[in-house]
Length: 428
Image (cartoon, rainbow, N blue to C red):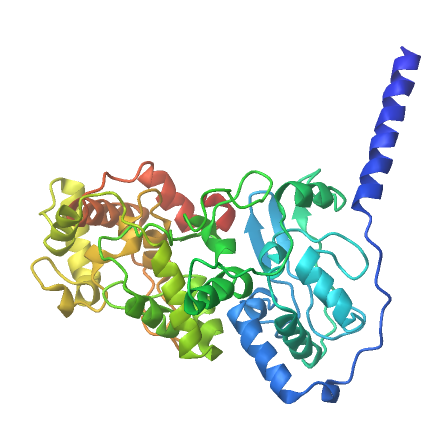
């Protein structure tokens, strides 16, 4: 028995040594923080545009905290991750990082000290960035005001918290390398693909992940949960209102595109971040995404007919929901019998209502409203204090049955309880 135990321990020790050797990455020597004046202003400005488009500032700024100083939490299936400090503070930020160390983090997902980074940092997308764009990002972050802000420890399930195992994860799921233009498409499409895939890392939110955090192969942009919200599918529109390039451009530029409605939840920060991109770039992104957008497979005419001419409520619960909707929602979202042009955001065409799987976006919008102080259109009051869970269920039941051709959401009562709990990890 002792011989078997010793043998097993020996095999385990060899395996650990082999893993550590496989995962080893050398540290880059620290540098003295470079002087901000040494970076050309035009390079810094380009980096600011890229950092906004990549949502870097939003992800690395805690609510109410200093810009870029980290501490914002991201909720995942395996735990909570806190973003690190990206200011040029030498002790707690990246002030002692060379451009080579910064480049390796983006291209390979490895920190300056040689630790593997978790893929909650979207280096699987940033690996595609050009050298010029990485240089501009480095210039931008190194010229921000330094903030002393120690990082918060992540709370990740064992053994996924072991950094060395990220080397195995990369071997299985990570494909490093810059973006390569697709010869089957023109320059505009490829520019849009580069911005969407590498700079904005759109798939990071809009693609579901497997049990170890890798994006689902074969299902890009099929929709996924992000911080309690459902990042809607970008390859098959759930709404019967088909997107055009002009409408998609307007949505990216302004956060609103009738008849599709306004940006909700985390998408509002994304729209604000895209604001510095020129129109040509946003139109290129629209071209790229519209090329991916496929029909849902449902018969379009019945869907459109139901969305624009809802059927009367059929049950007592739906009748109660209809009364609540008419009292509190119809002035903005339209009443039965009104043409869609009357409504600011026609409820019958809402992607939140037509989502085939989850009612969370509809429920969260009703509970918490839409912030109208962020410079984007579409302010909506919160009804968390006005509507009970039963009220929310009645409204959702009525809208789904009257305005869509889809079956009711399963477990609507349970979903409403979870949404009202306001815990992103419960919304899965």
